[in-house]
Amino acid sequence: MFAGSSGVTGAEESDIKRTHRSGQTIIYPEDTGEALVNPQMGWTFHYYSNNPTNYGSKLAPSNTLDYFPGLSVIYLRVPWSYLEPEEGTFNWGMLDTPAQRWIDQGKRIALRLTCSESWTRFGTPKWVKEAGAQGYNFKPGKGISEDGPFWEPEYGDPIFLEKLSHFLAAAAERYDDNPNVDFVDIGTYGVWGEGHTYSSTRKQYPVEVKKKHVDLHCKHFKNTLLAISDDFAGPQKQGRHFEIIDYARKKGVTLRDDSIMVDGGENAYYHEEMAQPFWPDRPVVLESQHYGPSKKDGNWDPDIYVQAVEDYHASYASIHWWPRPFYEQNREMIDHINSRLGYRLQLRKASWPRQVEAATHLPFRASWRNAGVAPCYPGGFPAVTLKDGNGGIAGVFVDEDFNVHTLPVSSPGRAPTKRVKTTFKAGISGKGKRGAPFIAPGTYDVFISVGSRMGTPRIALPLPNDDGNRRYRLGKVRVTH
Image (cartoon, rainbow, N blue to C red; front, side, top):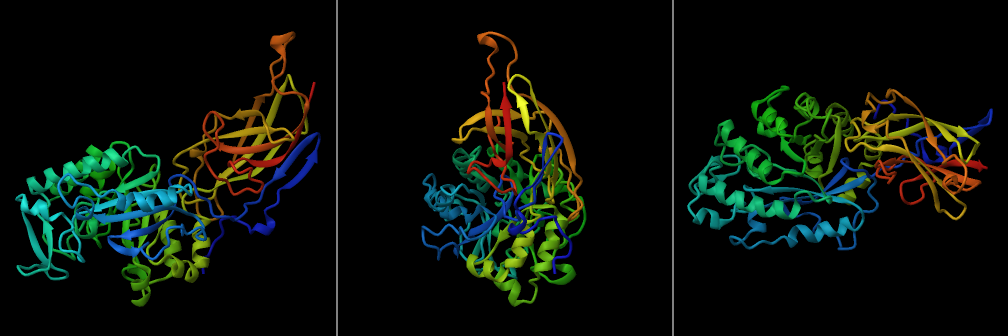
């Protein structure tokens, strides 16, 4: 199971190996093996999976799944009718209440707002139908039926689209350009928002209708990553290019697979080729079938999930079931996926002089690699921070010439290493008051981090000795007059 190696070691090997040679401190950090919570990657928990009773409903308000390694996003997938039960009256608390539980823990949310369901008659609010929007009764698996218990809108109907646009505008006013929102699905077309009508009316729509739903989301969510389901092209249609998928990609939308392991074996997923134009510059979302039904049908295979992460170069993977049994029954799979999911920046080697003069320079050499399946999309710059014996920051030096976004990805254990040499100015040379060094003589702890150009840490690294702010202690340096 889980062939291959990412180069991640266990916690018992995580202490930094340190040598001193020719006046240099040389270290060889080992990957701690811990799961990392970082921007634009991680496990997504389906708190609402359309039906609001799945799967967060049994959690106590204080239960934020702290036991689940790598959980970074809470996924809230709900029908429009629940959020705007009356025109212009909104029930945002349905989203904001669970969102704030995890935002308080440093996590983020993702949204899908749907218009057709197979468990409630009106995914689109009833008042939209009463306003004159056309639609169809349907029976799941049988298509349009006059006595069907569920109603699906005519997706190109102008009244429906007008009301939908107003709703999306209100949602975007609240959630667009929000640092707590990772992505929003284009979920207003197809049953469950998956981009197909196979399990609802089975009515076929031209690509121009589908484009209208892409356009509406792009119009309102101008500053948020949008995701389109692979099923817009057809649940089982294989290939790299489809008109609607290419159209969405050109508008900056990313891809999600809804979802793998509905079928088993070689048919566990169909669209890894479709993902190839996306992952080099935007994070791909990988959703699995509900774990319980997939397992019951004999289609669940941990090896397939691990391989799908590789094939799609996925940045997100889903917890699509009751979280505790999913976690307890898939521990090995989860740990393996965490070693590869998204990006994983490893510092393989670093060296610097054991002693420098305050008025000179600090040479720093480092070797970096990305052990994940995807680029580090948010990017960032390595920074060396010097702290005094009280933990105070005495100096911050940022290598602005090296953006970790440029680190390439490869198969497990084969990521190339990037060697970087930087010379930081450790003080201000000269005489008199204006020439006083800004770092006083003394012995300082050396920390490494990755983040903004100002040296603010943003990216968690698999290193020991975290100061609590994503700076990691590497060793010491002595500063003299």
